[in-house]
Length: 372
Ligand SMILES: [Zn+2]
Image (cartoon, rainbow, N blue to C red; front, top):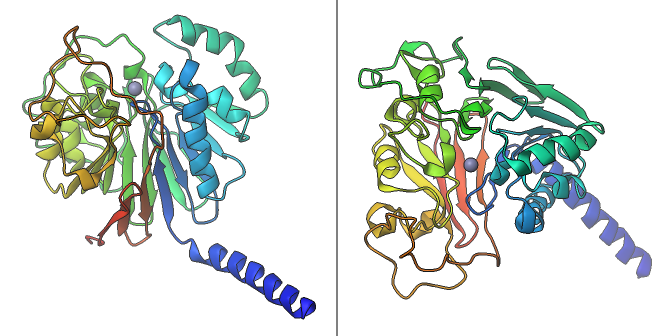
């Protein structure tokens, strides 16, 4: 009896192991909730991985690193093969050391030194980052560089304030949205330095631009669109909008890429303002916008249906504002708390270009059929 039980057990375990190994044919992408920062994990069918950014630091490092580790475990990973640091702002690198203490990271990519000189960044680059990269490889990337990962074509499209000037497959046409584009003053902060990525998996394409701002978006998309259109745009800069030297989500970028789906890594009070939502919701070919949080800056007026929003707040407001808040200012209520259970947005892409997006908070999944 016992022997038969063991045989049955072994066959169930082996069977399920085999099943899961065979079952994964998709590129799975976890947009992790790091409360208005960024952490986006890509997992290939063969278990290769790229993580873009690592969320917030300081008192929130354990929270955000923990949420990334949850995604790592859900994907069945034991290490992160490639880590792309978009830029040196604390909401993008803050969780890195805590994360690395729990999950080994094999290769780092960044755009080089900090340009802004914020105290926490300077300390991190002097005291922490050297110890991390000593255990791995580190590459300073330029636009046009590629990251070698099984099953994916991963191209760096922006870095260090510059943009790729060669054409990706599907790129090279004049961008009809450039006529109205005008350069803004220089953005001397870190955002403009962001490492932006283009990801191709068979016929599925996506762009993750980090927090690139106005002039870099123009260099990337005008007068020629070097990228072509994409299936998914991980909306830049937490969905914060134009027009300004430090604004993002220009019509030139968003309309030019013409994503079927935009996914915004906004916070409850960061991103999702009317000016950017107007651009994102108005882009040609758009089917849906998915948001990481309900944004008080959107209000009901500029938000998307709740089924497309991964996280609300721990303390439900009595009344969701119809009009967006236009702050921040001293008349704002206290920031809504969200340190409890957090939900990612998960994309599963197929080689034929079809993909699904899932909101685990309400188990809503939408399938997007291949459009070619
Ligand atoms: Zn940011």
